[in-house]
Image (cartoon, rainbow, N blue to C red; front, top):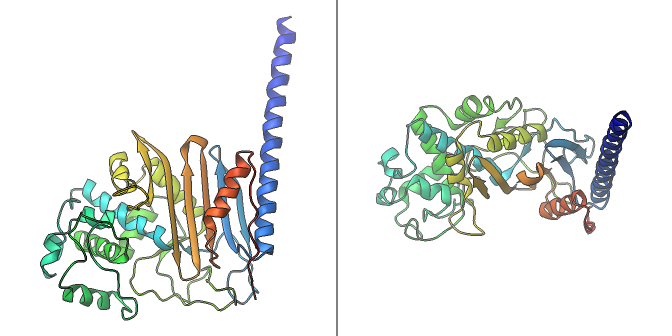
Length: 349
């Protein structure tokens, strides 16, 4: 009797495992069909990685690598990830605090006494939470870090008292990167490559790519007019889809900074605002959620993690349609066996 029970038990386990595999395969097929339709309707051009239950179930490239329509994308192509690249300077700041090279309560004037009086009122934490009162970079006239530095040196007054309000802008990011350089004595590019990408096992990431660099997905609009790679301020890390997943796992596994440091830069100043890691939740020694989106010219990216489901969705597009959250929501719905919406057709010329 025990022998028959053992055989039945083994059969049931195999049957249930097969059922789960079939269900997962069906979800993968539905997601692939959804992405294919999105591309055919002009709603998505780019790369997508999906992990569910702690395992990668989809790595997909669809569309073109540039505006020529001659080069198909593959998973080796690196993308600008817009504001998500700010995670590298935020994590870098916390790394340096853990090493005793700075404190997030230090004022900007500690590192740059040559800046005007307002620098003695802004803390690094204000920069991390976008509560510094600094105005936005003057993109119409700024063409380099040197241009932006001159603007800061001539800035007479902040927009508001540091810590009193929230204003998301890139002067906060700019100063975070300059503080890292001041505290380490090396360029921000070098710091990211040597102390972050290498440690996280990221072999193909790069900062501020140029035209001659290979495997850079080039962004373009709906008329297939291609954008340049020039940036007004430096320090933008570009990743391919697999390295982006490694970065996400690095955040979740605290491979560069401790849980307390992670919580410091993932919890925003107030609800519906952003901090250094975008937004999310850390409980104890676990990242519960982590969501961050970014865009630059016609690039758009989204990272969303839900630890309770072992789920990560990464979306990289080089023909921005402003719909990455809609794509992620549809994927989430399919994975959760819920109804989902197809994306509307986009007018592509």
